[in-house]
Length: 290
Image 1 (cartoon, rainbow, N blue to C red):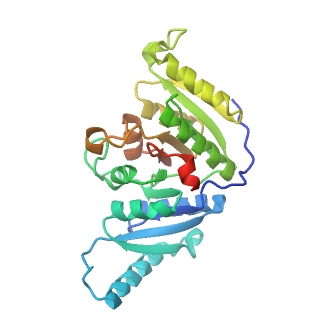
Image 2 (cartoon, rainbow, N blue to C red; image 1 turned 120 degrees about the vertical axis):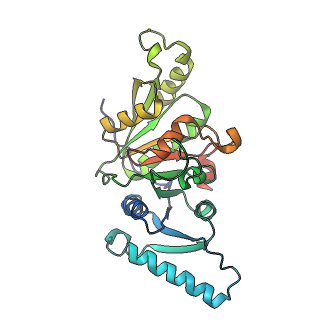
């Protein structure tokens, strides 16, 4: 199915991209990828490092010296990347998830690198990505270390499920595509046990709602696939489409004491196969514009 590349939006969705860095290869790779994205978006990029050492009682001159030293370390880490030359570097005291969530209040997108060994269990509970996804007020992008460079005309794949919560993620994707000059494909995943019927069974209302939502966006292509595991199926569709980004919405931030975002975003967050965006539960474009 062909897609139409939309015109650039005169009112940009993203003005500031915040990238968490800690000197590790995954964080530097994420910063490099985010720098290209920020350039395409004509957005500011800020590299954020967190100092977890307890130095709050040190005299201010030493405090500032430590911050300057940490900024110099970050600058050295990215010195070989021309796309990051001149990027603002900020250093805040505190745990990474705390400082990034706080700083994200002044950004429209927060970016971190994927670390497969971080966190507990299959969903990476208590990892930086998982903790931050529950707290950031703006969409979060997780970049795998082997992410391919952005195509000249990027492709965005957004998961749709017909839910009210998903609508904001869908509209956010359309706005991002307008600013980026990208094409968009919306993907609906249905359970294979219903795939042999003319009707989608109990998934009918969701599929109907998803199709209606996409029908109101003529620049967006629609595709569907059957799969037992939605996350894996979306990743397969993203690979087939050669997508630059996969975008989904979080189902919740509060279930089981806030451990679960929803099965699909949890799995995508911890095992991304391409740059993956999680749009927070309850996020609104009106809040983003403000």
